[in-house]
Length: 607
Image (cartoon, rainbow, N blue to C red; front, side, top):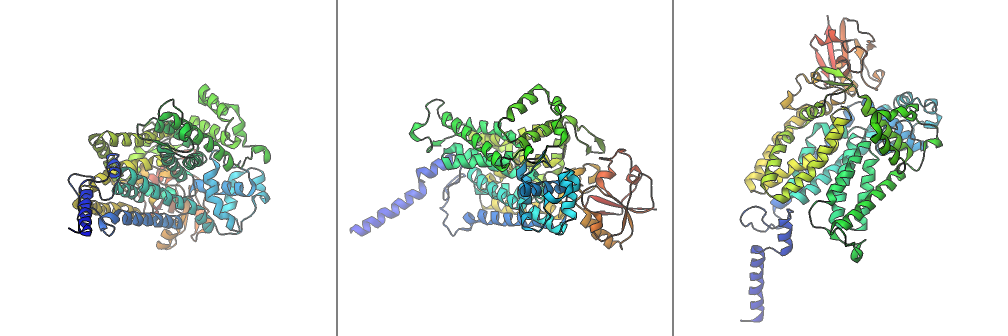
């Protein structure tokens, strides 16, 4: 036999062996729960997938399509809806901070989220805040209304540009969900997690607003992923990235400090870790693998604090006047108890002064309560079941039904999978506990927990997809069916309630404020009244938009006395929230509305 023929036979035999016996690296990856192209992840043996095989490329195509749909939905929502209540002050505070270096208009919120939202406004020809007497006098709401409605640029353009950064960060979150889900659960698990995000009306709505509720969710999840990757393989670039992500999360919202115990938990999870530069051969011998991990985590925390100081530009209140007087009141700390006072006093040594005042306001806000509306009940201190109920009403059916299934499958499919599910559940439970302790402010406070829930449930989809072609096609059909509720509720994503709760029927009798009516529907009211023939209306509006900017005749209804004719009223005021008399408009609640404007404004014809 010639030498060339003998070499060809040996090469073909070697190829068959590789098909039957995968390489050691692929076996290790499969045992770790990752995805190895060309290696069977279910039962039996599977033919290797070449680059032209649609089965291999389909998850990536679906992920790209879902990301595109996600961005389109958020952009259309941002273009169609008016300003929400909190957006007005957040936009003005962020713009004033970027122009003057002063952050005393909105100290209860960290600077990063407002600064990111207001950054595109630097391209517009807006008034200098330093020249506005309302800004100098610290009349923040008057200054905010003037910035949006009485400027040289139309309010609609200011609002849309301010919403763009949040929409772009939503796309970043979708990409992170897919990549992390694919690494942990396989490519179909990443697609499942991204699908749940792309069909979540509540998350999309708040991600298309210029507020910090979704921005903190993006940076919190990015910090979680980067810290976990850093502890898997410790290098200087990963330490710097994890520290910057954690600092960005802390600078987006005060509640992000809950990531600190989560980071410590990641150190003590039992999984392989590769220690390279910066420790190398000098890795400490104490603590086994946890010694280098603890040092890396301390470095990450140090970098996050430096990032926080950099975001605040090293400026303090003394540069541009004193903070609001109520933040200087020592009684602000009293309701928090000795532990809260000691913790805040220690924190002020490390964080910027503005950030310390924000933490003090967080404690003060949690102690004084907040007006709420749930199932016809109003008050200032919400019941302990408020957040679980809102989560059950505002979440997609797929998440509610898929979560117990995911927990069951994780428990049945092995120790490693269950540890991963538990690791993702810890941030969810901590965030839920923090929200319950701070009083009910709307389901938007639960947004940071959503990416972790999407991953848990999406991982189930990844496991089902690996069972064969029929399972994958079944998931595709289920995906198309699950898109229907999202399409039906467009563009009223902010008021979304799932079918398990009753859907649109009686929605304003279950929830209010930022869960339904945040002042966003004056554009919809203008269109609805045009369809009704532009009748004159008496208006009761909850929000910070300017009704005079829209083309419809109206007179404000300022008292509780019954009137005749058309009445347009925001659901929040119809429910009696934020009114001295909660039963002020009980005479309207006894009637049926003749029309709705975007689900949040009800139109009555009183005869």
